[in-house]
Length: 315
Image 1 (cartoon, helix red, strand yellow):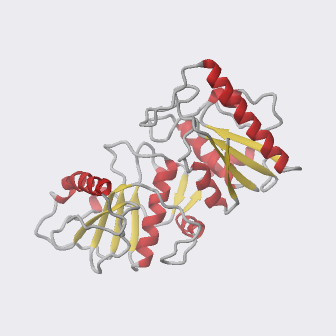
Image 2: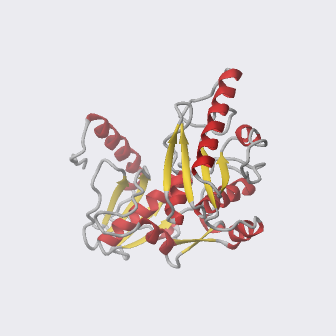
């Protein structure tokens, strides 16, 4: 059933219908049986479809974990595509599950979607809840309905694997001695990923103008943070290569790719290393411009993980 929420509109109605249709293939599996596992919320990243980026997936996980805690439910998730999450993050024991553990009961199975326009915070007791569709739009410092800090929930579930820690240790970076600046160009300067966000710039002069404006933003941040090193992170090799004359630090960037794509292991490791290095900052800045993808919350994710100040820099 599609239930109208307080934040309802025709747009949300269409999205609800779309999500209901997507979930129908799971509802069709329900049988006249009872679930053995109850009071558990299962979050399943379906391997057969393309998923969102790293930040959206982690945001969805933490939001659902908070809902599970609010209702005294157990929480479990499965993340195996396009990489196994345990290759890069250690996950709390007993949280990961295999798809064979999902049960489909007409009586006991409930299906919800993790979306920000509906209130899915109440879970009926003695049910098995499944979530397959998510938006990953929520990353508050503290969840109002539980009073739990996002950072605490994350640390309950995740910690970096040795491969990530060893790479960061090799960089010899001292925590809180630097600030991080993040730029999300997507395809503005070169093709980075296949996405709905079409921001490719054809004109070379317009590309150079954007790069110069971004350089000026970096100099502003340097001026605001005396005696701090500045590390710059981006999804654009073209932009990172333009920084050689600036007094900033740039990590190795031969392997840049979006984790929603079938990228190689080095590119995926790079995404986690950048994330955790940023989380070690004294502060993190997200630079926004009309040509950039301003909705990226990758850098905000790093700020939440490290519990460090986060600022937007508009240019």
